[in-house]
Length: 418
Ligand SMILES: Nc1ncnc2c1ncn2[C@@H]1O[C@H](COP(=O)(O)OS(=O)(=O)O)[C@@H](OP(=O)(O)O)[C@H]1O
Ligand SMILES: Nc1ncnc2c1ncn2[C@@H]1O[C@H](COP(=O)(O)OP(=O)(O)O)[C@@H](O)[C@H]1O
Figure: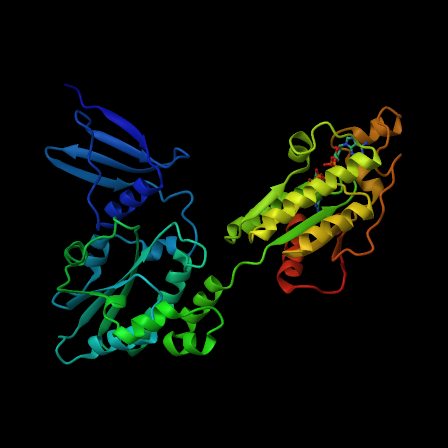
């Protein structure tokens, strides 16, 4: 029988399993019967690893990192395989594994520090700090990135205090039911001791950690080192949503800036929803035209949906022309019931918009074949309440995004012109 090769696209949980196998802390995936090689891909069909069977042995070769793997928890520096780490470890050193499953406390650091400097531990020593990261964290829980940031600080502290002991940090994907056992970790790193840090805590500390609620700053500071307390604070403070409304003439640059803004927010881990003009007109406002009444209905609908998104902590970015002050005011009112509202006037001069005429609509409007065209035969009421005024003949897309984000993050300020 000739050898068969195949490609398998993996879902999130299976990808985590593949990651653990590549890190050397989980079993290699089982090859289907009669198949001698498998290329594993993510759902975007990016080849990630190839498994090959020779005799009874399956070897797994990494091909490319996950396309979606970004952020501190995916830093390649802490995603090194156990065999690579083992190859660097000094032979004869005492090896320990410390497993971090929740934010490191001051107590965890003290306990680990004591262990590292204990006279019972032969020098030189090595501690592999394994931080277990999960791709799904419920609201209010510490994200994988937050856990890694706090653990990084803890490791930096331990390195400072540890004499003759290396402290190595690795991130291992995990979810309930898929956490590597203590034995697997011990075997992977050649360690004799595996400590589950949060298991070692004294009972009172465990209870205090569980009982901690929002606004108990003093207790949080007593229990946690500053880096952990910061992450805790961020997780316990619900993300406040925002509605960002970009208004301006057709061709002023609203959609271009809105799209760039949404990608930037997503890169930064914020849930951002684009209420794209065309999609809104196609779905939410199908059948509406460009009379004053129809435009006001369109903009109010956008405001309603945007406010719902923001009410649940998301950032809604909408970019209709929104030429009338009354309906912009309605959006502001709806949004501000639950969230922050930022009005951005994309104030590119009409002559420039008309010269751009991407869709040829200005030419048609001038020729009279499109009635009620904003700026030509229908008014645009210039906002007097914009938080930010951007003229795209002077501000690049990237700068526009930076300026909007500064306003969104800074809170209410006086109107800024660029
Ligand atoms: N009469 C008239 N006036 C203005 N614009 C017109 C008109 N007819 C069609 N279009 C196209 O529709 C887009 C504007 O739709 P909006 O939903 O953003 O308009 S509004 O806020 O309801 O006024 C606008 O898209 P953008 O260029 O993206 O702004 C135009 O391409
Ligand atoms: N600084 C800028 N910001 C936004 N768009 C710009 C800028 N400079 C040039 N443009 C161009 O202007 C056009 C604006 O179109 P679009 O974003 O669809 O506008 P609108 O959504 O307001 O109708 C695009 O072709 C874009 O590439």
